[in-house]
Length: 261
Image (cartoon, rainbow, N blue to C red; front, side, top):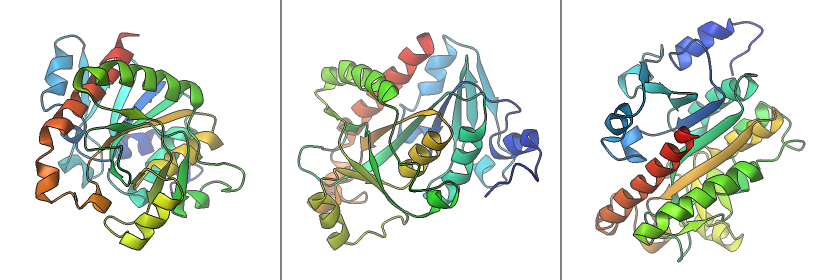
């Protein structure tokens, strides 16, 4: 955990994100940008906006992805997994300049009616992880997203998704700690609890955002479907590449529409 009382805040931002100041809206992503956006997304935005590029001071992350500022929005790569992401969520949620935090990621679907490429923007996340409770009181702050922001993003998502016949839901979601560490029994247990999708980071963001009064929402593109034998490396998963590419366009259009406001 980063302790603000011991480390200069400016140094933290440069080390973690490559920026000296944060903006009121932050878009975070735990995976490479071209996993959630079209490959040419930044070139398309450069035609309309001034784009600032930043490199994190983290020697590992600096080799993986770049960070960007466009108008009043920062696009920050946070790295995969709750252990990596939660420190960075804490930095963002604790900063008084930040108002909105939008998470872009992928999720595994456990249900029949969320196929590859469909989008889930959950209001509640079951925290099947304990790390976020080490930062704030787990009983006082529940991992619930901001209703106003979620409704705003859902409205935009449905508008763009209908072009591609993709679904947009606000289903219950769960965050787990380990990549591919879930057993079939655990996944079936989640499904019985009316959990539609799972990922590895979102509950930590929702909990920390609630603790520090930030608006948070997660936009999750369905990738693999482990209970349907459509794991990430399976042929069935590869066969749905077009749906996932269409989902990237939807997410890009959502973000582009936010930049116009």
